[in-house]
Image (cartoon, rainbow over all chains, first blue to last red; front, top):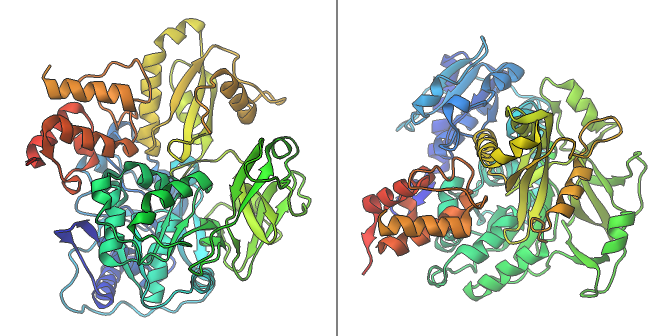
Length: 541
Length: 84
């Protein structure tokens, strides 16, 4: 775990195991038993990982939630921890020494949940062995959540066998070997950080060099400094990172980078953009970056992680396809066109399916579509979720007849998947899932907003390489538009406080501006189109 | 207001603010209010080094130390080293 060149902490596998065992014994003493859920709210670090592993050793089911940051005001903190712990009926909620005191009063738990601090520091010697537990492959191993009111109700339950199967397939596709070394700044409460950068190296016994995301964002070049220093071979990042690194790292910092050890830098967790990848390659090919390093993957927590992976063989680059943009927008088909010809749009492949993973593209009515047609991506695999914990209703919506309905849109050409967007309006900001209904609820709760009429959607920002949240809200009275500044600030602050992400803008409109569906409810995509037509300065792609 | 503070405010208002025409002063919360996002912190750090003439090690700075212009300048005082 690296904070600084003078402040890095290394644990051997043996030390880590002993710490995990000590955590297990400690949790057991607090009443945690096999099958019990345990919520972990700790900063990125060794302690969190040891607590997670300790819970696993007991056969308990851990769930890592995002740590409250300074952005979140305790008084306005609608964290809903009581909601999550009620849904999970968590036996323990584990925090660390540095958990902000001002939040403790707002950590409300259900009757059955107990707040404890994790065991720290790591033990010097072996402690008592954790109690003997028997495991069945189909037992749930852990849960994963997205942020926000919606995300915190959808605990993705993953079995031991699902996780191990995914790691076997992914490890094979990546040609993992004992000399591999992973670099990560990705949060452990997100599937990419948890699975690819913690559980995968744990199972394959690989070295990991890890940073916390908040440290990394202040000094993005540190990622490349660490890859150079520790000769890391593998890393995963959301698309925006490639662009961020290309644009924000000064030339004088770059001259010390030596990226020759990197054999795969995998773009994943938000739509991949050719432009972002090219910016990175241009910026860093002079730092020893080999060709064939930038790769792609389509992954989600509901499949443990990867569904597809582009070919990692040291020379192949993810395929690109140029398609007619008119036909794509109007008829939802991908008709190949010559690169560079007018009215084309480029998509980058997310690769081929992993073994035992299948993808099907379906129409709105659920009919399977042939290659080249855009529709919803359905997934069937040997590593799908058992369900959303305690939410058979949500599970039944998404898992039908053995297929998982992803809500993502894409098309298939020559055996490769191209992901084009999201059907269910999910907004992905910097790789982080944001449910528009959560944003809308926050905006609609402002006194000046009329009758729940707020719509949130994503708009891609090409200068950053990721999507941003736009909120459109109707005021009660046209006169209220004069207070736009104050309302914007209040709503914006509330969104940051709850979701940790700053929206691009909060746009106030007069009554009856938002487009409604035939059922009388706000129609997101139609409103989005109307908004972009009126605000051309917002759309830059 | 002191020069460095004013320069920082101008820079933030001109380059980074997500909502133009918003009045900012030395104590306006910037990141926690969503007026700027955390991706801009690295740019602010560079500008802070420039206006104070200091080198500031990013690893010694936490995002919460950069939430207002006043906090930024205090951070530079605390962890900055004069540039040669």
